[in-house]
Image (cartoon, rainbow, N blue to C red; front, side, top):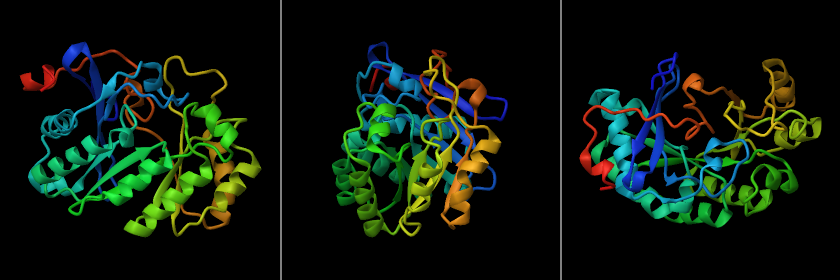
Length: 293
């Protein structure tokens, strides 16, 4: 399925009649302008209220081969030339909680780097808990760097549990794990934050975010993407409201960016995967993938 902006959304069949969704984006101007976004689980047990995958029943984690198949299929379908692979970033931000499938995730990353040695970085987004971040820190691959993103979305534990019902850790524990990751890698950790009108967008919330250590973290203010069945109390900000909310961050010199998703018309962006049951046939789909091999 191809969006008006050229983004591509894929539904990939697996054994047992299941499927996962993945997406390919082009973002001119970025250091790595080609993004391959893949899934790590069938469904998700975390339960983020703003995410379409949360409305699917969690089934299981994907094998390393199933993760790798997504990556190779999308790269092949996009016909990316070997010389351009250095501009590709593999984003493990599709369906599922990647660090709940850490061993298969790391195996897939190693296999991906072996197949595409030009790749220099992958991104992994997690809702926690902290011990999974620490386990990743202790088992980082040597050949390729992993950029960590933590799904924060609130400045208080009570609201975070409301937005992410099965969030297991306190915000303080997550930030401490993020700081340990930064110390081990030197990479600034991204804190993902979806501003929601009347919930996490007060001046107090903005001041809390503005106090985050900019040497360790940066803030990604992500626009809420529409998905069928999203709760009525979750309302994203307008462009002007986003500007006003982020002003204290700008004034304090906090490193942040505002992210608006791509491929919205085909439900391909953050929080939208698994929203529409449309299967896109890939060219030369391996029979082994359809059989779960």
